[in-house]
Length: 511
Image (cartoon, rainbow, N blue to C red; front, side, top):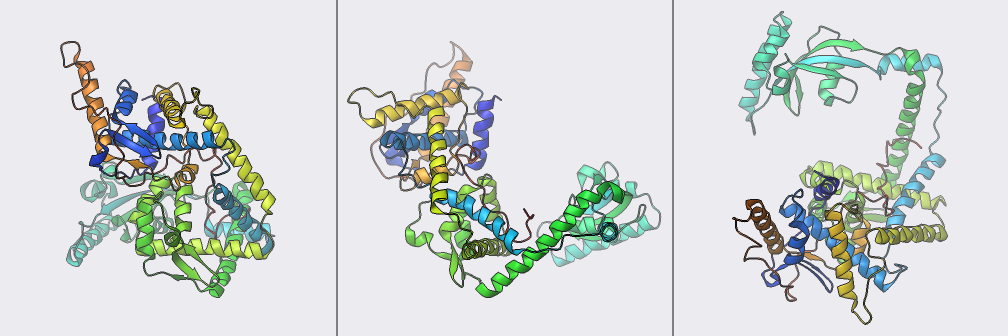
C-alpha cells in the first residue's frame, strides 16, 4: 500500500459521505455549481491505480476531494484575496480557547506551595507511579441477559472464587472458566499496568490487594471478574517528587476551576431542551448539512443570558480532527452522555462570556490579522494542489479551466506525484451555500467500471478487452441534486489554520 492510498484511506475514515441516488443524473458522480464530475472522468483517474481498491468509499473520498478542490479553484479564480470566504468563525474558536486560559490564570487562585512532608504523605496515599501485574477470570453475561441469567453467572463466579481462595490453582481455573479468550490460555494473565490502564472497577479492586490476594467478584462493563494480584511496585518518593508535585498542583487547580465553573452554572441555571439529544444525533449524522439561520439558531441548552445552539454544535463537529470517529461516538452515546457533553459546552460558553466581561477579548485588529494569515495559508494550499494559477485560453470560460486543473491535481495525487492536501474545516466554509451533491448511482457505476477494466487487463489479450458496455460517459443533464456532500479530512487542519475546539472547561490542566 503506497502513501497515496494510506492518505486516501485516512480520509475515508473521517469523511461520512452523504450520497443520494439520482436517476436523472446518469453518468454523474458529483456536481457542484457549474461543475460536474462524470463517471468517465472518475474511471479514467482510478482504472490504472491497481494499488487503490475499487470500492465505493474510495470513490466517495475522491469525489469529496474533487468537490473541495473545485470550490477552492473557483474562489481563487474569482478573487485572489479570498475575502468572500468567511474564516472568522474558525479564528474565533482559537481566540475563545485562549480567552478561557487567560481567564483561568486571572481568577483561579490556588496555594501551590507544598512542603516535602505534605507531598510525601499524599504520595503514599495516592501511589501515582504504581505498577502492578495481575491475573483475572472473566464471566460474561449473555446478550440481553435476564435477571435470572445474571444471577446464574454471578453464582458461578462466586463458586469459582471460593475454590481459588481455598487454594486451587488460579491459572488452571482461568483456563477452564474464563471467557476472556485472550488471557485464558495464559492462565488469566493481564500483564503489567499502571493507573488508568484498566477499567475503573478493575483498577480499584486490583490496587486494594496485596500480592497473592484474590479479590471479591467485581463487575465491569465486560462482565464479572475475579482478580489475583501477582505483584505491586511503587517507585520511591525521591524518584517521583518533582513530577508528583506538578500533579498535585494541577489537581488543586482542577478543583478550584470546578468550583468556579459550578458557581457560574448556579447563576446561569442552564436547561437542556427536550429535543436536544435528537437534534445532536441528527447533526452528527451529517455535520456538513446546510442549515437555515432559524435552524442553526435553535437552542440545545438555554441559560440566563444565552444559549448553546445547533449551529454552535455543528461548527464544533466540523472543527474536530477526529470528526468521523467523534460523530459516530455521538450517534452511539446515551442520552446522559449527550446531556453531559452539552453541559460542558455550556460551561465553555459561560467561561467565554466571563472572559469578555473581564476585558480579555482580543481587539478586532487581532482577529483580522489571524483571518488574513489564514487566507494566506489557504492560498498557499491552492498553489500546492495546482489551482491557484489556471491555464486558461483567451476567451475561455472559467469552468473548463477549473475542471482541467482539478482533474490534473487528482491524477497527480492518485499516481503519487503529489501529496494529498485535505482542506479540513475550511472545506465547510467553502461548501456553505454551494449545495454539492454526490450520487450513489454514479459512485456504484465507477466501482463496476473500474472493476471491469482491471479484470480485463489481468485476463490478458485473450480476455474481454476495453471498458464494459455500461460505461457512463455523458456529463448528465441538470436535475435534482442529491444530499449535500461532506467535507474532506480535517487531518491537514494545521496546514490551513484549523483550530481544535477548547478543552473541557472544568478540570482541565492549568496553563
